[in-house]
Amino acid sequence: MGVTADLCDKIVATTYGDLTDDAKDRARRLVIDGIAVAIAGTVQEEAPGVLAKHVRALGGEPQSTAIGFGFKTSPVQAAYLNGASMHVLDFEPMWSPANHQVSTSLPALLALAERDGASGREILTGIVKGTEMMGWLR
Image 1 (cartoon, one colour):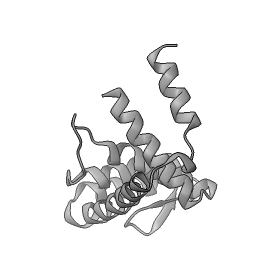
Image 2: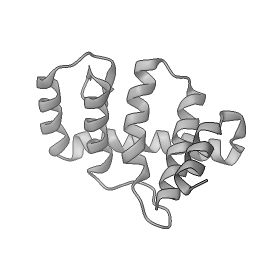
Image 3: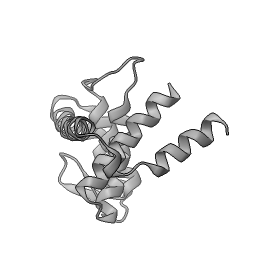
């Protein structure tokens, strides 16, 4: 099997039960940190507000929260806006090699989780899988 197939198999097979207590704790902190940084980005920088006006004007089925802006939009638009809000301050945890894992995977995860009614365990498993994929790809 190739590297891509190995990665896909590992990601698909990973369940909440496979996660160590340390991984679960770190995942919780990543989710909380990502949301906190998104909120900070909405009030400390101008760009997320400009983007929020654009996203609101585009409309879309209100299924996912635009963090810090008081409205819902489509999952794609929410992920786009929330990703910008999470990244604008550049305050996210980094690993070696450096990557921006939280602002690239958490917004999509939260938008889809809200739309689909995912559990907290599914969200934690998703952020661990996203982190794992970024590590493998780097």
